[in-house]
Amino acid sequence: MSASAAVFAILVARNSISLSRGDGLSTALGMGIGGIFFGGLALAGLYTLLVAVEWLYIGLKVAGGLYLIYIASNIWRGAARPIAMDNAGAAHSRSARKSFWVGLTTQLSNPKTAIWYGSIFAALLPQHPPVWCYVVLPPLVFAVEFGWYTVVALCFSSRGPREVYLRAKTWIDRIAAGAIAALGLRLIFAARKAGI
Image (tube, rainbow, N blue to C red; front, side, top):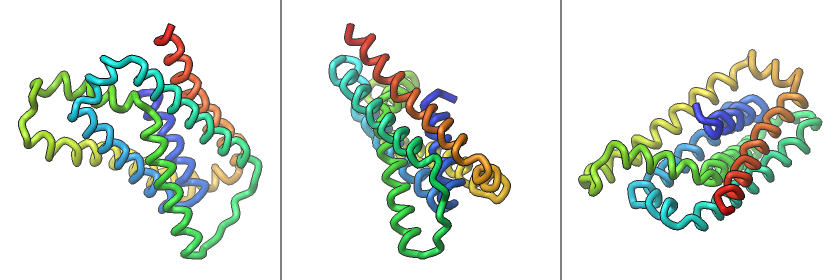
């Protein structure tokens, strides 16, 4: 598992435990849609564009790194706040929508996802893939991304992990924030090295 995938799994697990199973699944759905986006772009040639136009790749890395640091700072600031358990349907709907957008924007914040899929497609597909690849591969990418993060959401939204989280919320959130911030910094420093 790559560092990015591990950090994204931490985000899904955190939302599943601290908010709800629905929030974890909404985050997983956002990650899956982001996977379709990058898989589709990789099929359309973004991989080639990012390799050829270095400043674009560097810019995406910096922007993605800054976004991940922003997400990490929000998690860090909320680490000491207790969780208010609210069963209101409207509040859950807003929360699930927000969790979806967090999943989607977090997935889209990492241009390495496009490189990852581009590399796989470049290695496994001919230079001009047949039309069926454009129809089959994006849903397959979605199934892999959403499937993996759904497993994470379901595992971590069960009673045992939730109780462990509630007992150690501050530390778990700060560790999650640290991991997400580390990935953001890694993207920024990698962009800086590439630009030198």
